[in-house]
Length: 387
Image 1 (cartoon, rainbow, N blue to C red):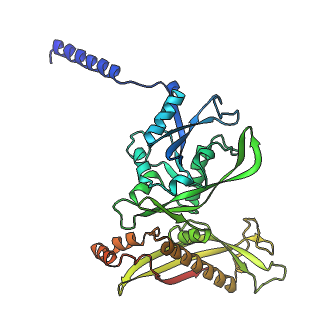
Image 2 (cartoon, rainbow, N blue to C red):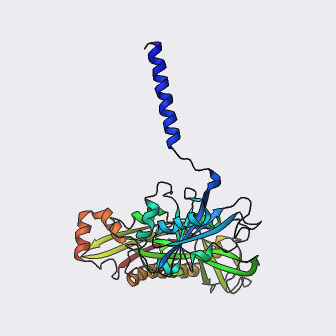
Image 3 (spheres, helix red, strand yellow):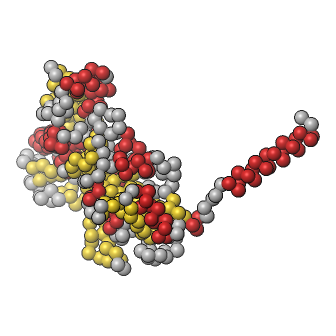
């Protein structure tokens, strides 16, 4: 290539670069509202979108020296109109790329089909697929106005709490992409979201109620429609079936005490657990085989079973009578989980998915001919090994 051709090529590249740089409008950070948490409510027949926005100087409505965020809300007949309303009110362009949590208020998730709302975020290039989605026992707008001790942001606190619950297996986390895919072109067409509660402590931080956030259970959905909320026993039954890492406790009577000084009741915890559930179709009925191996650890309690602290004692204090009581409690919690499936008419246990993975088209044919099979009473064969 001659020198003239090289110069012409460099000149052409420079012109293209200048044209591209002029055509791309980069919004300065000072003109953007960086959203870290987002709540959606259904109020007065329209959507109300509430955003927790970073406010580093602690300025603006709702910001305090102990809080690095402020809360802004917009309303509209669609999610996009409500978010645009925030833009008009604040003069800043909402930036969703850093949003770690979407929370649905109770009035919304009980009445609306959630895919109509979540489609906006799914098809947004700026929104992360791994963003957590949860439900709140009240209005999401109120949730983001609460103050939580030891945290500077409700959105950050929610993301951390939900992830911690998922890591310990107590309550499964449902990222945006998983919640949507589990109910689309899927035999079970069901899934769940974390259920959040705010527990006030009676104190005030300025004009804000102070308290703690808690993930209490799961809200169950089928075809993106609300079906119900799991009880504590139903949630623990689900965990016993599918979450080997979950830590469970069992309060038992200490009928056969080795030492008279030991309390009348004992609290036992699971130090390790291996569990597997397998579903089969036999004589046009679904049969479940549940196997688990659990190592029990004695904890320090008084005679009411109240836990003083995680202080394991020697395993020899877990006698056969205690193990028998634990086995009965395990069975009951699992039966409660299956009863919720029938009561809610929602395959949140994903039995249909498991059958399809095992039998393929034969499972599809069976489920088409027996549409309520996953909701009918299922025979469960238990093989529980306690150590």
